[in-house]
Image (cartoon, rainbow, N blue to C red; front, side, top):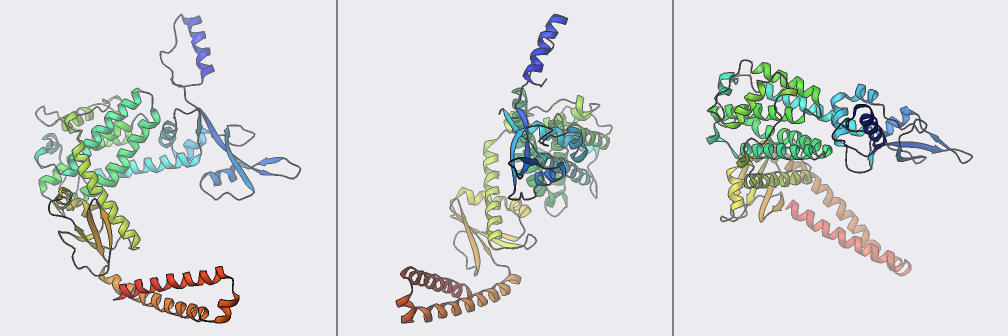
Amino acid sequence: MTSSFFWVARMILMGEYAMDQVPFPEVFLHGLIYGKSYWRNVEGGGIAYLSDAERREYEQGKPIPKDVQCKWEKMSKSKGNIIDPLEIIDDYGTDATRMALCASATQSREIDLDRRRFEEFRNFTNKVWNGARFVFMNLDGEAPLTVQEFEQGLNESILGLEDRWILSKMNFTIQSVNDKLGGYLFDQAALEAYDFFWKEFCSYYLEIAKPVLFGKVGTPAERKNKQKLLVIILCQAMRLIHPMAPFITEELFQLLKQRFEGIKLNPSIDPYTTEAIQALLAEACIVAPYPKVVRASDLNPVIEESFDLVGKVVYTIRNIRGEMKLQPGVATAVHIVGTPSDPHLKMISDHRHIIAALVKTTGIEIHHSDPNLGFSSTGVLDGMKISIPLPDELLQQEKIRLAKEKERLEISIEKMKVQLSNPEFVGNAPPQLVEKHKLQLDQAERALAEVSKKLS
């Protein structure tokens, strides 16, 4: 149980006195929750605390004006920094409230809490629902996954890098969350479950799986495998998150049970499908077995390192696109240059489909020497050079922009030269100002040379 020290001490003493036994064997004591107080100074030397409506605006991100001061303080009705859990539940939902509080139960003596924390976890519960809905949608359609097909288990011989990576991440997260819960590190357990579902399952795995699920790449057998993996991971994730967010996870677990009604356990299949079926045979998520590491040998740092390399390439490509100010919907060619003996280059070449699923490309080309790409932007990663040429539809726009920039620089340079060639200006102006103009002229001339080079 969790409570304050003095309440616990009183209950232990009274329990032993009245019942001749300690009322509870273990107690979790956490820091005191602080709220943020907002006030204005008033004439005469006093302060006036802000109304609840105005305080709520600042808690939700509205810029704080200069005449308003704030700080974290112990909750007090007179200071107006009380957080009413019933009000928070009405605004953000019970699951978001529970998970926000769980994720805030750190080992520190002071826990700073305001509405932005609850809003963050309301967004997470929305993500859980939408991620699960995507899974359900892709279990049906033109090639639905039947109960009988799921009972046959995974075809582990055709698992791709992304499949083995998500299984490794899932096992690692399960192991870590169990360890954290066992050590009463509730905040770390909640955040690790959060990161796995949002950052790894939704942001990476689902995006990589989409082309296969939509029939754009891969074989029918690979599509079935992906569907089965989605069920396995969703079933694990709902039970993993259930102690922190019991209502949405129970609802989704029941929908999963209905989808696979009548399922039977086949003892000769893989351990992941076996574990999922055993969970789905339980009456409810709350009484289903809590996830444990399914197969320790799948905790594979080599697989995770290989996938992380692909992730770094994706990150580099996104950075280059950002520097080029390309819209997310604009597809570009990607050229990766490296030495033939570089194992990283071979890894990237073998898993180009993962990169193509995560960034908008017209194709990914591997080279052993620099290709002639014309106008392009480049990034470097682990000895490899990643280049993106400017798309044809944007090339003419860039030429127009560069021509205007060249004209502006030429006019500016001409004005600065006229000024610096004027003896009266050079003789009468402060030396620092003259030196500043010379520096600006030098910078403008170098910028003009760069623009001219790009135009050519």
